[in-house]
Image (cartoon, rainbow, N blue to C red; front, side):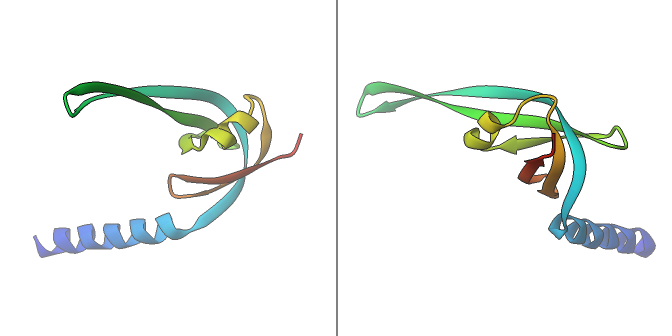
Amino acid sequence: MAIYHLYLCFERIVLCVIVKIVLTVPAKLVAKRTAVHRHAQNVNGVPQQSSSTSYYVTFEFESRDRMEFKVHGNDYGLLAEGDSGKLTFQGTQFKGFDRTR
């Protein structure tokens, strides 16, 4: 039991270290999508509605592995499917993309 617990603790430490590393790698943008979220609430008895949009992009690496990132709307608008370049990310957080073609 102690060995198993030690393994779990070690795994968490490794994951923490990996998440903090900023990587820049060649990648290709293969997909874009949005998700619209609708919100409803009552304010002083008056129904209020609003919405928000989340933006996602999927990159494919040279290894053919893929990762999806949530991005800001302004980044989403500047990216096009098929773009190739250098992707910078930290864990699951998108940091930037420099197009090369």
